[in-house]
Amino acid sequence: VSSSQDGTPRSTEHERIARLSARFATNAPEVRLGIGDDAAWLAPDLVLSVDAQVEGVHFLPRFAPYDVLAERAAIAALSDLAAMGARPLAMLSSLILPRTLEDAALDQLHEGLARAAERYAAPVIGGNLAAGSELALSTTVLGRADAPLLRTGARPGDGIFVTGHVGERALGLRALLADRHDAALTTFVDAWLHPTARIAEGLALRGVASTCIDVSDGLLADLGHVLVASQVGAELELSALPFAPGFEAACALLDLDALALALDGGEAYELVFTATTPPSIAATRIGTIRAEPGVVLRELDGSIRPHATTGFDHFRT
Amino acid sequence: VSSSQDGTPRSTEHERIARLSARFATNAPEVRLGIGDDAAWLAPDLVLSVDAQVEGVHFLPRFAPYDVLAERAAIAALSDLAAMGARPLAMLSSLILPRTLEDAALDQLHEGLARAAERYAAPVIGGNLAAGSELALSTTVLGRADAPLLRTGARPGDGIFVTGHVGERALGLRALLADRHDAALTTFVDAWLHPTARIAEGLALRGVASTCIDVSDGLLADLGHVLVASQVGAELELSALPFAPGFEAACALLDLDALALALDGGEAYELVFTATTPPSIAATRIGTIRAEPGVVLRELDGSIRPHATTGFDHFRT
Image 1 (cartoon, each protein chain N blue to C red):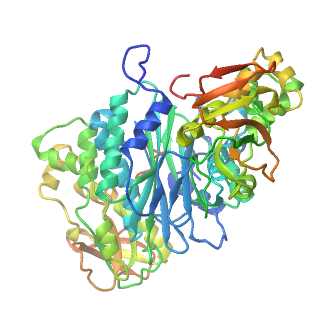
Image 2: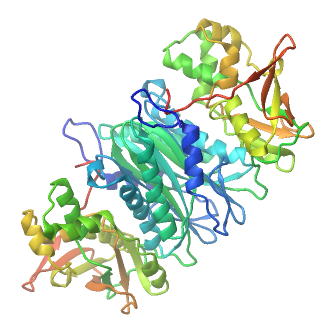
Image 3: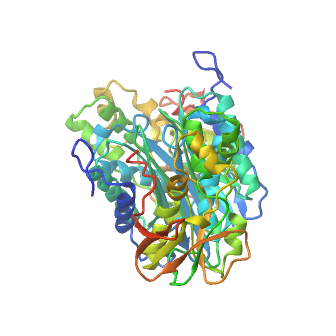
């Protein structure tokens, strides 16, 4: 447990989730998997997860119209179903609304949720409205998965793969926070505003991937969850990281380290998975599972260095 | 749509739920019932609901230790399963935590959730932690219901029943808000702090009740939802309202109208149901369903007056 600046015990998000996970351990026969993976798994084939996006923490209202922010919040939650190899079934939305929020804004929030619901065939079947001092969008997602993709099961020698690009959404968020509208940054801002839940990819990975997780905290942090759960380590090839076209130049515009964004940037909603054989979906192999715990990075010059896993922590930033 | 004091359109909670309900209508084959009842109903027998409790809106931290507040928040959500005649299966908890919240407080929140989980055999299978400016506890509940109790189906002549007492929890909240600790108020404060989700009663009402709802907005407001859904009206006998011992005297201590609290006080989590024959569970008959729309109140002197349904609105108070 860490201590905050004023000396009171406030642990990190990861420590807090570990405590929560321990406190809510259950032997209920219908619960095949409780807290600790991307989603819970109920017998026979239901998976459930909840995710919240809070104004001032995950987004600022000036970033985009409310429909875009709400669609994004729903997609962030649906991404956990993708990481389980689940087909979306339904969503429930708990909205905390500032009292000053106008009806037009609420209609926009609904519009964005409805768009995600239609795009992912996950009807919004329940909701709750409550007042509060800041906008918060909490989305519960329910899906079907006959063979969920878990975090346990990675074996030495398995390839490590990632869908899409690394770091591009983290860069988009930095551009939004800096209120920068350079043409070279637009594509990354758009990537942040309009993520994709990799549902089709998750479904295609059933029976193929040995583990799967979505990048919400950061590539290294989320891979770290898999490594701990599977009791293995990993070697990552930095030269293999899939950068989007123009990514490094755009990072330079904001004085950002492209590699750091790629390894530690969160909210990417890409899938990181391990597999013995190359998968049939579009993905890039970025490394290999090793027996030795921890992560080693193979640098561009071929040298190797160990890396401590890090990631975004809502309670530290 | 109403207008707020500054003239911008901000509709009431009820209007907002109606809009939400319309926007999220779905024909998905697995959705037997979407937004609009106490919970959604998925084929074959799943019901789901979400409820949020926000600091400064639903409670103040000074009301009780965090474990009590968290247990209460979970019970408020579970009450919707009771109103559907469902057996709880699992819960997911989305917590928004002030950055200053200490680990001991978080442990207390978990403790309260775990207590509700154990009491109602509803393990917490998923959760999310996010930072925010105020504490908000959003709970998704999942249950099994082979024959859900809906809001449609009340027929003229059906009796109207309520479990427990009316108004006692609303009185407890008023005492907490006024920071009053008179001995005569203690029992009502305790009732507010420690509600019961009427799961056993809901299960016993399957096949017996023609409709069922839990009192969250207020007796008249929630009965009003049933009347609208069933396209009927009601006559309530004010002399039949089940007051807890000492209720009227305690209301007088705070200069409150006992009848108004009984009819309009929210967050009671008692079940209001209609049935042709008297139920086997402990409940009080408080009126009769009529064919004519609207609610008429039979006063203590036998006279009759119409009553507009009202209730607690988070966006108006």
